[in-house]
Length: 147
Image (cartoon, rainbow, N blue to C red; front, side, top):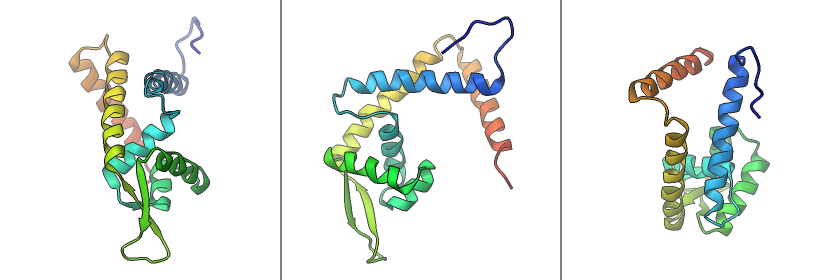
């Protein structure tokens, strides 16, 4: 929610408003897929597209989620035939998560939706302003990483 005020929003509030707006727009766009998926599924597929095969614990760490939340995420993606759980190559006790071809195809479509959402959000910024915004945000993020 954006509240008009005489004072500019705090940095933290502004970040939250931008994040929430992006998630809302992306969720609305992803609803057109008629799959009952949302932003969490988008993030899960994004990580899996870059890191699969990986274990559920590795995925949970990458998403900063508890294992039970990742289990629910994987159950939904498996029901959609986007992922497959297979025996781990080196650890017989573990399963690894593999992105299937339908999962890769869905990620490609969702990535396009995500890219369009970002483009729409930054439509009023020049390419130099976009680059500057990304540079500044990267510096802020990096300053928060503990050495």
